[in-house]
Image 1: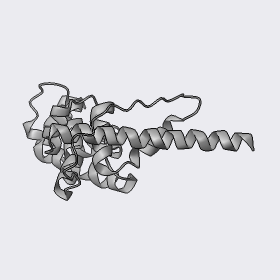
Image 2 (image 1 turned 180 degrees about the vertical axis):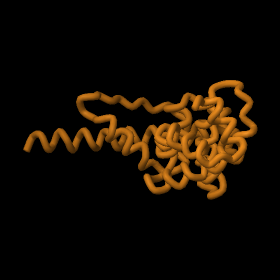
Image 3 (image 1 turned 90 degrees about the vertical axis):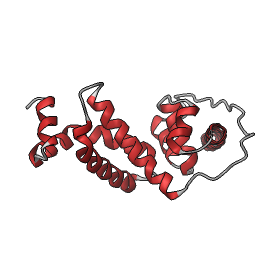
Image 4 (image 1 turned 180 degrees about the horizontal axis):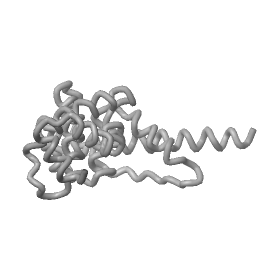
Length: 181
């Protein structure tokens, strides 16, 4: 069954087609969900919520643009909606927007460790960091998506970068000390 036929069958609530669509896209969408969620279990819950929304709104997909892109947008919006409902964004001092450079040497830090420390950022910092740095959204777009100001988006990005920089420096120092022993 082709993708278009699969989509059309999902539009008429064909459970077999829904199952196939889930199998086809769940791993890609799970990685997106995990990137924005606090942990693995929450990412699983968010993925399930995203698929419920996908199946509920699939009749709105009109074959304009990438279907996978449409699925990804729903997944990101599902996770972000959870955080908007939880009010994880506090009003912050918007003057803290200096750009913090993070130097990463691939020999010193694995990509898995880097992803782990990004995952451990406080919610508001992790969400803005991922949207801006990893997904390329502008501060204006992020502000609209998260219902915050552009200044808050910039401030949260600066704070996320500062936390990551400090964590990476501490990690490098610890590794250097361990190698001297």
